Image (cartoon, rainbow, N blue to C red; front, side, top):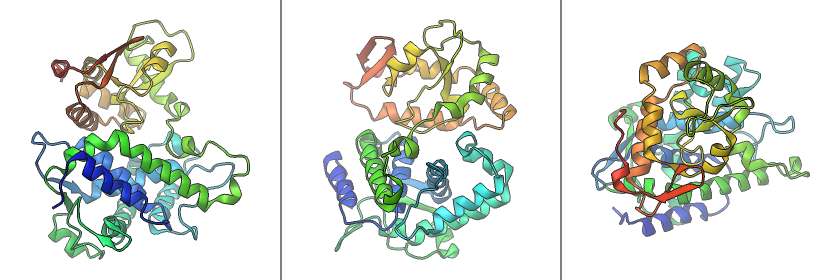
Length: 355
């Protein structure tokens, strides 16, 4: 087991990025998904080993590509040099099964409820492919192979029997989950930038006019949140969640836990906000009290509202992500409390009486 201090682990993650030209984006997708899962899986003991369920990992990877299936200038972007790939094809088949005209407005959780048999079939395809290739190769950089995240000795096969023998999971080494969660705000953008560069290289003929590829691949498109915005307004009033200002028109739907930190579009992570609060808050972590109030709207109520519009609630994921984000932040982290009020994080802040 390698040392898991942030500097050492960060250097090894950078080596993964710089380990030669990739023929597909799958290793990057797996690493981004692992970073997100690490944030949502932070243990109470920072030195604990943490198991990552392979079905959860497969779902996260599918979700990343699900957002990228929207055509750009009429074209679906290639994610490999030859334009083929098992994972992308599996997600494309799920897309065809739900036959949505606007996939960005249909979260993958909704697609899973519309076509459950297809979703489970394709998720199994993705899981087996991840075990056989990206997870097996992730820690191999050039001629160097050192397991610094998890034991990959049993990977490299898509045997369901072997996957079951390993409890359908990979186990992050002691301390790795906590350190990955600490590093996520720094290294996740680097992996996304490499992903953008790879897609640009794989689709050179499409980019004469230099579109905003990063936003297309990873941006939070507010238009997609119109449906949850309406139901939130009807249920909780059309006023700013943060300052209580009346929202006359052009309501903004804000991710309480910033989209750039954790891509949670579930209703439990969404509120209405005025343009001033929405813009000023930006990508800053909010005062933990805001998280408590958002969750304090009530799990049953949020789940009911989400079900009424066939939208995910993600209550448990918001709780887990909030715990992971705040537990791994240094005390100097800027915390957004209100418009033009940003203070350093204090551990006494992290009390959520509404939970």
